[in-house]
Image (tube, rainbow, N blue to C red; front, side):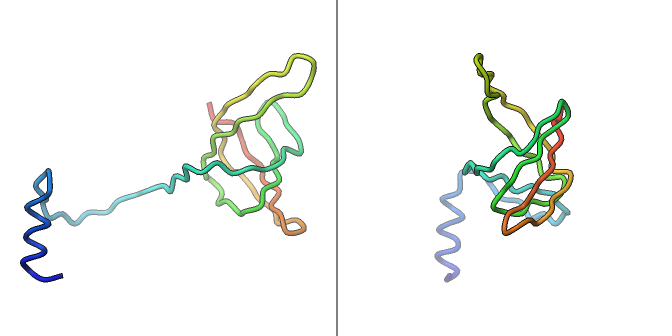
Length: 98
């Protein structure tokens, strides 16, 4: 990029930029929903069979229906606490976050 192009881009900015050098922590947020299969459930969390690995500590938004005559829709936050590779899938333990 030439100096004149760079100046032109700077002039188009809505807000003035200030040079800064400092550490930052970030979390990757994936807006595309993924699917898995719940293999067991407890009051404290779930075991989910997934296609992809997730790092321990990853926070998930989970959504599912409890089966039965009067289905209950559940939406919750859960944290990955463990994961084991199993026949090309990943058995993943998640703990509900309150």
